[in-house]
Image (cartoon, rainbow, N blue to C red):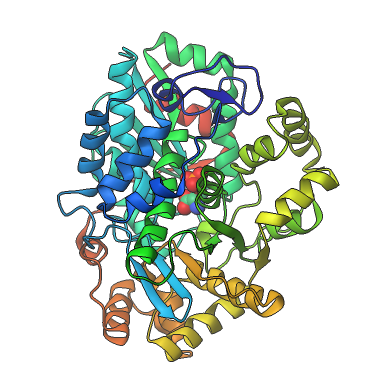
Length: 500
Ligand SMILES: N[C@@H](CCOP(=O)(O)O)C(=O)O
């Protein structure tokens, strides 16, 4: 299996080369040259396997230059040894008839990013050996809260790597910030950016695309890579849990082999839902991938009108991980939906860069609408949903999952589609304890108390233990206090690497 760029200016690379580079040198994103397809027998075979075995089986289809034993060992390191608090790794919980929640937050940082970022460092280390790369890899991460901590945790003290995380100073939850600024590890640095997530991500992408800057780094023994979902090594582990959820529903006889399911995905940078798209293209019986947004509803508008317009107000919401107006992975979807028309993709992305807007053709929009219904929910509806679902089912949703829940409800109401629905739950409610507790308690001044009292209160109310790593934050020292302006990000990188 070879990988090519969405901008079409790059020779084909192996998976190991694509993972090590992170982003294509022409500014595009790496995509598989052909999407592997699987048959019903392959999917049925997954039912009897553990999560780890399912992961190895699916990774093998894309990472063909990795030996099976290498993949097995990467997977065992990522998902074994009690790394995930639930032995199923990504359990599917039945909430109501035909309604399920896929819990992706049992990993060390309580967010779905662990599903990929426990594995990526292992895949990268293996890739560097495979391609004989001796240079120190500098991993730049832009985060709206979850990726940053998961990348720090995954890459902590990983040899031959240095990690720099940039998060929006005012744009993450209290727990998300604490998780990052207390991070230990000798190869890690965290910076607050005075701006929003788009500023941080655009800053990181500019650095990737600056050839003079990259040459300077190379002269000093460094190469850049990414731990965001622009890196193919971040996306491929996410394909696995779509297959795994399906296999679990077959196992528990909630569906029969071959039945369709819908997934509802809280969406920001479009990596998670795109992994579902790959699973569907491979042959998993997914009818719809429902794209759920918060008030930053640029994707809802795009999927309804074909116009992507980032020239709009940026909202800070209760679901901060989705506070994004420039959604990176849409580029990969555009590439596939245009049947690999890299020139057209390049033109749209250039328009986005210069005018903040582009419009796709009606034929492409029709193809997208067929797969991706979309909806959005504001903060008021988000909190109402958290309260309503807990009252009815005794199940506590985090704000991102609540957005997905409400969009799923609206979709079913509007369409009458009764296909079994899997709501992709991206974070533990404890990560957003103030919002969740306020929503459950109806009102109150919980946010004024110490964040840790709120954690305990939430624990009592929903009758679930606080994830130990979150409880431990209370006594951790703050290690990262640096704040930078977005235009200073290149200087920050050079200073950190001690390049004069
Ligand atoms: N929601 C993300 C934003 C970055 O997305 P990624 O999937 O490209 O890493 C976050 O929490 O940081």
